[in-house]
View 1 (cartoon, rainbow, N blue to C red):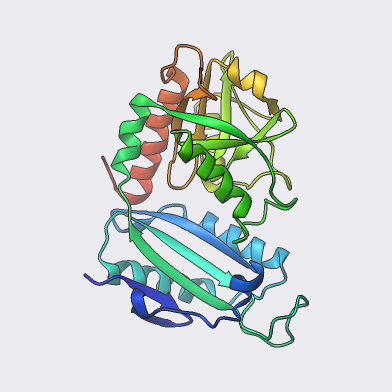
View 2: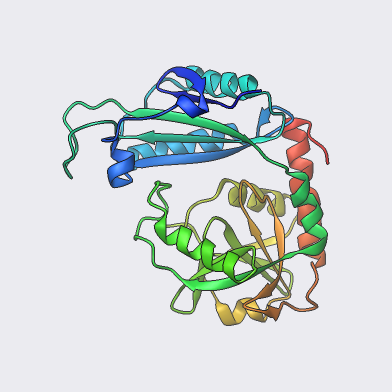
Length: 287
């Protein structure tokens, strides 16, 4: 089937989809985005994604472009039109098209773009048994990374450094503090306690992050939201990461050093079972 995209109310072939060269998302990264997992044709955690999108638009004083019901309908129409059961839905909303000027334009309408691409979530289930490696990089991003904007150059450079090193992800350091990954949230486990950086302006409040906290607490596991150092991470009993595209993956090496036994640990494995059970509950999807 042909790849289709949504642009400002129209579903059209991806090859023909475009925005004006003076779209503010292109010229200023004056735009926000979301990536949603779609499994068995159903969007995972749709309402939390919608809530975060609305909050981020408000932080940038960009008007919400349409009511929730029609917006969700357009997203589901695009998913169905592309014919993929398992895929990623990308949503981008910019301030609009206007003559290039740093200050906000007076009357530009938001530009809304959505695309869909096939994605194999079964690879993530397999990686639960093997784990992944991460490297560390300095955090060079702007100071409001809690807003999910398209200004991702710092993230891109960190991710490329990880790829060049043969690692899955780069964890970003502010001094000696681990904040998060270039596209994931970072976690460690020590003495049975699950630790992750608190929300604020320093990290993105991940949808998968929030879901995992709820699942862990429901399982009577202790979650500490506090900063942790690289030294703590390397001395941890277990480590893992979470994101929409990697709901949970064990981290078995950091900067080439094995974490504990160098294999996925029991608490991460247990959490992995809970995460995928929640995916099945919401979508009906099973590996």
